[in-house]
Length: 305
Image 1 (cartoon, rainbow, N blue to C red):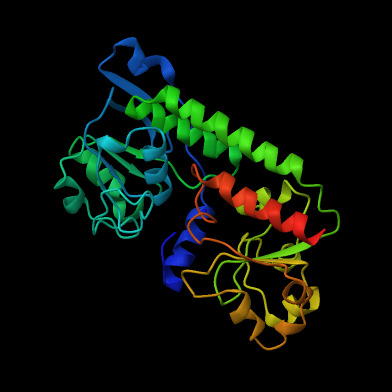
Image 2 (cartoon, rainbow, N blue to C red; image 1 turned 180 degrees about the vertical axis):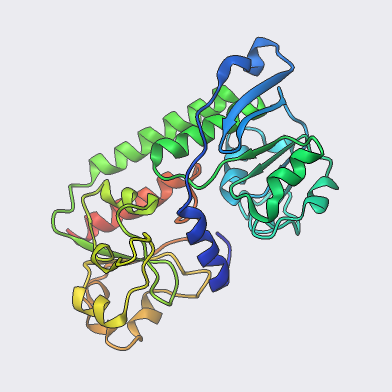
């Protein structure tokens, strides 16, 4: 599932998180075999790319993080305007929300990585023979790991990608195992200050589910979108044990600001220190910093119990 965002950008991400994920990885052309190209199964089909591309453009903050985490950073020549991590990523004015094929082509990429096919960017680049990997927002942990492996294969860093996946799995397991199951504890995850939230069936909801937390937004999702907008009355009535704020940067929210909302000062989470201020970016991306999000949840669970 970021840097400071407008509400429109937040909701664009919400739409992205609702999409499906790409296919599996075809290792038949792994760069270690000496082949000149490799084939990766992505959401846009089987994509053939150079065995080790030298001019990568990323239009996805989550994938930018992964590329650098697996050692492909030196191959990246440009990233989109929301790719704020790591700090040394070559940030540009390229947009992942309104991608412009001509602007991307100016960087002469031999591989472009996207998480959404907006403005027909995939076909536009394929038309000029530029390989594009469409790796959408992950629906679950397995898909997140699969996409990391895809990027490893596509960039000549399969071993590093596999190690990253193994390390992430171990860290997440350690955090969950160290936190006793949150039996009966309820939570509210805030996407923005308009009270948009996530349900248990979303990627984020499944992460919370690892700890046995109960999501108050589930019964409010009448449209089954996975991303309902809660009413103030409903939220106050539910009185969640934990409140996770994923809008600290986009909307300037924190424990102090929400305590000033009408009626919120009486909520148990507000009175008992159950408000958790998350980094918007870490709480919305399905890449290498996911274990940090998990640790934030684990620490909150242990504090409340």
